[in-house]
Length: 129
Image (cartoon, rainbow, N blue to C red):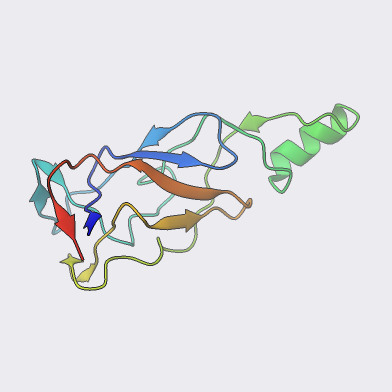
């Protein structure tokens, strides 16, 4: 069984420098262990998915420009998440606000090539399917 992800869960990006907490808006949501439960559509940049410090992705235009200016030396720049697609795959049977629940095994792709994953779901007892 997988763990339900809730507001405050710790996320990380494969190209980011630091972990950051998931944000969940209280629109039609239930609380799990005292926190708002997330679903697969909680992927909006800077609303649900915050910045991860500095970005090291060469596909990020800001990083590419800074790296070119530094004569090819990889130069990280501030992270600005570009997450246009929902979390995948989502819970098969559990629904939050009529959509598949977000569990700790889900990932979300950033347009700059990073994979965002859940480091800590912020729930200790609640499992979902």
